Each structure stands twice: as structure tokens, then as C-alpha cells.
Image (cartoon, rainbow, N blue to C red; front, side, top):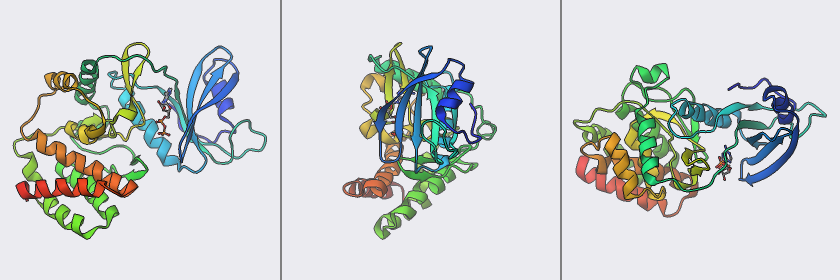
Length: 307
Ligand code: ADP
């Protein structure tokens, strides 16, 4: 995977670097408020999946690229290979989108079929147990090489030596500060002061996490494998992967297969609430509304027991 010296067009980069001939078509496949996705096809039939944004900052695709690459390197789930990411120059006459747009080019996957939930549980467990390739994570630290985003919210990933410190400072305190809500902050302060209590007798090692694992980011690939996309990757407690489980659709088979490989630790159910709290706070910060009461209910329940 390369990052960018500025290119004058994505077509030219593909033609010069992928080696599968000229680009013969570019079809838009989706569009969101900040990015559009395209499938580029070369004359030899090779397809590439490209996301580009005319107003995104470069860090968003860098975070996605490094996250996908780190998951790809575990050789567990079927993660698209990232070819390139960066910013286009505004060279006049360049084909396609120019003018400073940011982009990521990756392997195109064909989604179809429905492999078993057991397979998803097993492969996710294998990814969580994979030996870290990052030096900081190998030394037992928590974080990631770059900050990224969770939904549209910045997600800081600066390395910390202990998981409890990382989750308190980089996750809970960060979201509580963004929420700027005195009632939530008061409850959050109490919980954060006693966060260690939720981890008594539990040894936490850095696992590579997708970080935003809900059903919209999980897809079956045509050859019977599972892929997970659009990540907010970092090295953290494997249980934190389940903070979005309220909309992930994991079945009993999934959980059974996962826990056959990664044993369930005491206190898991309460920590699942803690990890959901992070995502509810993030949803409250992004969308407002009923997510506030979901966050407050968890804070009330956990502070009653642990603070
Ligand atoms: P966004 O960042 O805008 O949410 P996504 O990463 O979710 O974009 O991708 C948008 C759409 O493109 C989704 O429908 C997703 O299934 C599809 N998609 C994502 N990655 C690939 C890929 N590597 N190959 C083919 N389709 C993909």
C-alpha cells in the first residue's frame, strides 16, 4: 500500500500501478454526505473499489487505509487489500475528479451469499487473538498508529500503557467532553474514577479491533467468507469490539463459536454495557435524541454497582 504524492487522476494511478490496462469504466455505487464510492474497471476486467471525498480531510482515508491494512495482515477475515490513498492535485486536464479531493483505492469484493454465523464468530476470534504486528501493541500498549473516526466523530488513538487508562481518557472522557452535558459528565466522572473495579481479576491484552462492528459493516463475500469494512481500527480489549452489538445481529451461534476460541471472562456482561456506553455517547453526539437516555441508563446502572 502506498500513500500519496499528489496524483492528477485516479485513472492514471490505476493504469500506471495496477498493470491491468486502461480504465474503461467508472460507475458510482453509493454516495454519502462526505464521500462517494465507485467501481473502476480496467480493459482486462480488473475491478477496483474507490472512495473519494471532495471535502474530507486526508486523515479519514488514511485511518481507513491503515485500519484495513492491519486487519488484512492478520490473514483471518476477508479484508480488501488497500492499494493506495491520498489527495489528488488540481492539475488542469487530469481525467476524473481533481481539485484536492481525497481518495482510497482498494480491492473490489463481490458480496453475496450468507456464510454461517459460526464462521463469523470463529474468524473474528482469530483476528482478536492474532499476534500484533505493530511494535507498540507488541509491547502491550493500547492505541493505533493514527487517529481515525467513529461515524463522523474524531477518535483519538494515542498509545497508552494500560487499557483502563486508554478507555477512560481516549474513549469515555473524549465523548463526555464532546457531549458537554453536566448530568452525564457527573455520572461519567464517578464511573471513570472507579473504572478499575470493572476489570478486577481480568488480564487485558491488546487485540486488533475493527472498532465499529455493526451489521452495515459486515458483508458476506461470494467465496463463502466474511468481510468487515469501514473500520475504526485500534488495539484494545477484545470485548470492546462488541460495543455496537445492539445493531450487529450476532446470533447464539456467533457467540458460541467466538467463546469457544476466546474464553468469556468474569464480568463480561457488565463490561459489554460499558463498551456500549461509548457508542451510545457517540450516537448521542452525532444524532442526539434517544441515545442520551440509553447512555444515561447505562451510567446509572454501572455507577450504582461500581462507583
Ligand atoms: P462509507 O464510508 O460512505 O460509509 P462504505 O465503506 O460503507 O462507505 O462503502 C459504501 C458501499 O460500498 C457499501 O455498500 C459497501 O458494501 C460497498 N463496499 C465497501 N467496500 C467495498 C469493496 N472493497 N468492494 C466492493 N464494495 C465495497
